[in-house]
Length: 260
Image (cartoon, rainbow, N blue to C red; front, side, top):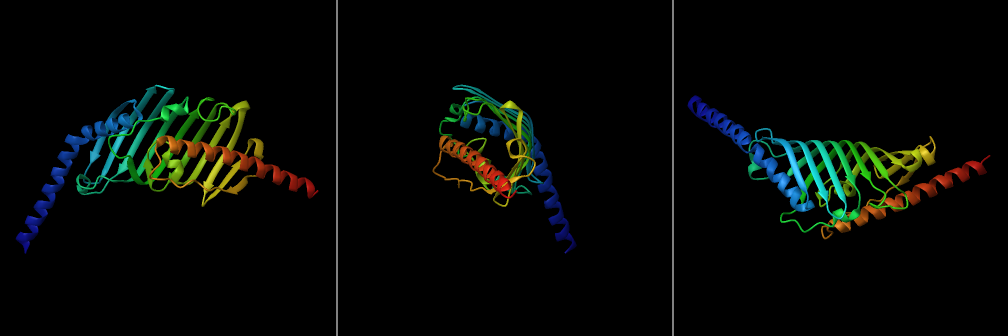
């Protein structure tokens, strides 16, 4: 029995050692594959400063990812850290699904919706079970989606999303589960946004100090949608949301006046 235990222990130790060596040897290649996949999907230049593959723990970490595109508009994405949780103990070599995706330190600038007229990627889009985003700034030029509003900047302190298929960098918004963010609009207008349990709240700027709350029905992602269709859904959602918030604020203001 003791001999069998030693053999089993030795086999496990050897397997773990092999996983460490393979992770070190292929960490850079894993990062290059991710960069190639993103570049193929966005038709853009993509670079990654460093990547680390930990097969024992089950994690792929990427640092300083940059995306640049100057075709039909400008798309610029900088991400400080990406962490993808994979199946542990070497199972990631068989099952490569990213279970939890953590993205931190995002700077996203887009000048036109046309940059999302993407070609069909050679591989299937990345699918993850859960997404968490921290410290993200999404900036949209006036010509991007809502020309009548002007330049819009969304600062996300934290956002979470459920199962997501990344057909565009904004696909997580269609699976949103929580949000803590601030929107900066022209003329110095700032609105604090929150989302949880299907309810959206807005405070500050046009809405005053008391939060305005309303139910938010996010469109269900359709597997048949391409990147352009998803962007159209997000634009329609943004317009509908703005109209509902303004209408609710006007309703609350009128009720307050009539109650005097």
